Length: 203
Image 1: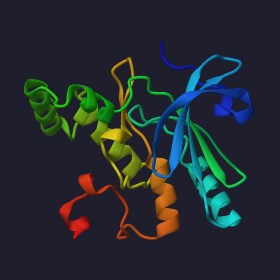
Image 2: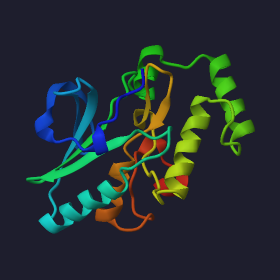
Image 3: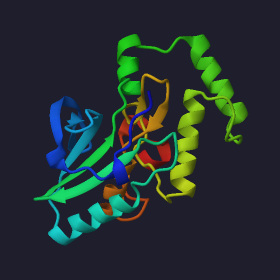
Image 4: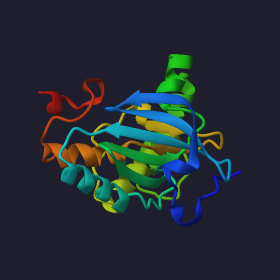
């Protein structure tokens, strides 16, 4: 069944119970949480900020503006809360984990499957309603962020590509890109993960 969206996408931290930690990275921690009234699961990402109060509040406000995603290839952000030096982001829970988790389990993606993904991605990259593939869904998510939200995802890697039990593939952590850009300046600053950066950025 598809996830049930909360009324007006408003959720407070007092309404959720922590289940367990499911990830760490980008200066934050991600927990699996459950809404007390609906029993729906969410992912709660919390990032400790060491900036001035006014800057933290501005970042939180910018995240709120960008949380209303209308793209099926981008993880839904339900709420952004700033309190006592911590930015908390309540996100759609993707129960299949990340592409990195998958690669850690199978080590390598079978060649026929990988070939099908690559060929389909190249052939249909310009067609929005083409057959769904992992590559194509990621590309559509990136196109949405760039054209509709004017966000450049500057740290795209397997751990930021999530999967759920319905087979949906979605991009996450683009909100962290907003934080990075707000605190670090223009897009020519060093932001990203070495293993997944272009040679021109590393040099």
